[in-house]
Length: 117
Image (cartoon, helix red, strand yellow):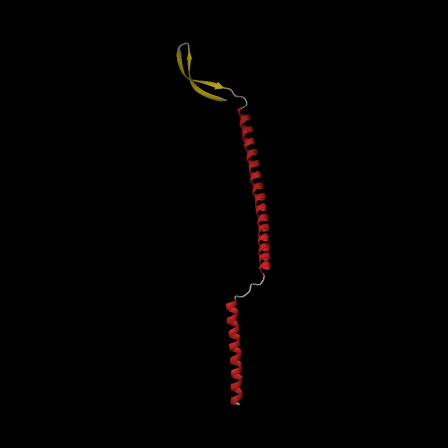
């Protein structure tokens, strides 16, 4: 029950301090129902949030793995398509000259050993 002190005007006289009671018979029940409903809604919101978190994390993990395998497959395909890259002509000629110079040095060294022996 709710009680308030009010000024009451009776017979043109003001009486102070008289209490007037407003009766609301189901206020405690309303309070109980409100608290119970708030708890239920907060529980449902918590469960929905946890479900959303778990599902989204699984979805992201699955997509990450798929994308990773796709990238690896594309890389392998690219390497296979590209094949063995041909060495530039300049480097080929330089390596040929080096090989010929080595052969000539080896022959010269053998001839010197024959002369000295």
